[in-house]
Length: 458
Image (cartoon, rainbow, N blue to C red; front, side, top):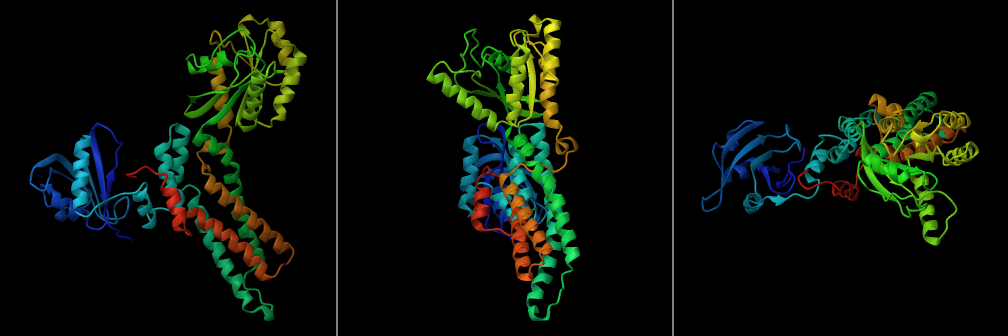
């Protein structure tokens, strides 16, 4: 366990508030705070106890009345001695306390340094450490659950156990290299194959979950497309319950992409209103249509909105074929149901041969049904439904891909009866990726890059 130089930072959000908490961690944290504190002798107090008193300036004047909580190593977040000072949330008071701590040899913490120390001291692995930042940044029920799952160990503990088994096999394979001329085999090839297959069975659901996990973390990009005057801007305004987009009977009013966010059943959707799909009448509209097509390529989901009153069945059939070519999950949404005859509605449903969600964007009819369909489409992912581990981090995904590719090469090598040195090379690559994923193999640059994205005080 490390007991590094003492650091301090404001652990609560900056700004004026009723209470602020200043966190101090590292060697001498309790002794240093005690020198500023007028109350009980903190050096004699047990871990996880809180004490009321005052903090004073060097001249004895009172800075503030405070509540000091003592956490003794290793039973703290950082596994070091930690003190948390609860004071009034005045910027002046906070700065006064930090200056006093600085005068006693405490330096200001870097972004994420408390969590970095927790990782270095073995409190959790790197995946769990990154989940701390994701948990703080979570803004929906789904992103909260995904971050909490990773914070509790998620998939990393299982991968660490499998990695250790793979290390044992690699050691045996490399031992064979020392007996190359004697043609011995210490690593049983069938057992090695079964282990690699078992690891890949763990990896594949995680890899498959990334598109959903990334959408959960960053919001599900959902693009609304359709012909001009289908009611896309009206629908966006109705879903957001505000006049976000300009609505007009003139075709081609929307020339640029308009985005906003909507939370449905704890999932954040990034709704994107786009220019109508048609033959452009001018250069500016052409740019807007090109942006629409790009947004369709980038989206996680497509809402194809059509004017149920004015569209012909053959036209709808062509539109559906175009949407299908995007390869994206999509919903067919028929607008203006309030002015649509039952006969026309039935004709369109027959030609579509798939469910249509009928709405009236202008009167807000059946918008709840549309929201439920959007939520259901995301929640069809098994990981989201069951609360299983979901990969939300691009760094994790890259290392999982690297591991899977290396294991695939190793399995192909077994089939081709490659020599132990070639087999060992692919296994080492797999171990490298797994080690960098969980933090068992790290570099200072990697840690600096990860923890620099954290807020100061965490």
